[in-house]
Amino acid sequence: MRAAENVAPWVPGTSPGKAEVAVVTAQDPFGLSRRTNVIDTPTLVDVQERKFRYTAVFVGLSYTFGGSSKRAANNFDFGAKAPGDQ
Image (cartoon, rainbow, N blue to C red; front, side, top):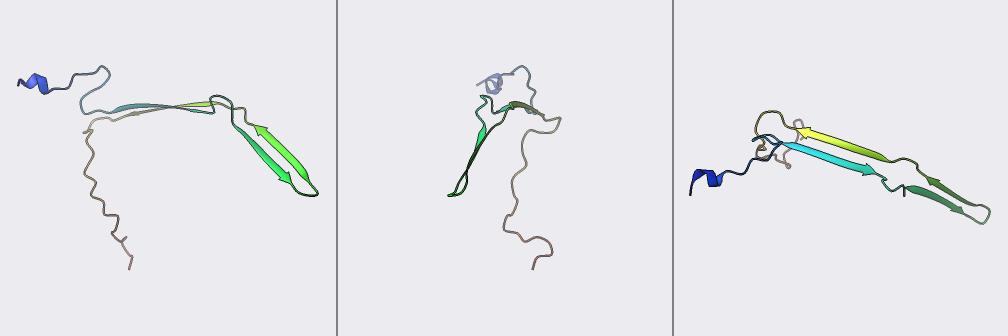
């Protein structure tokens, strides 16, 4: 086997050892968010309905500058006591 066959193909927009992530989220994109409060007692009957008029789109970008994209080994001891604990 030749060495070139072991190398992953290069994808435009990426660099070896770098991480690029884009996240897009939408809040109530179809305008269906509403809240209804109902009070039903023998002396009082009340219904309140509120429709929220907002739609939001959030875009997040993450890029790793330099360093290795490999994470360090997870050797955290969750059972260890904090300093000063008895």
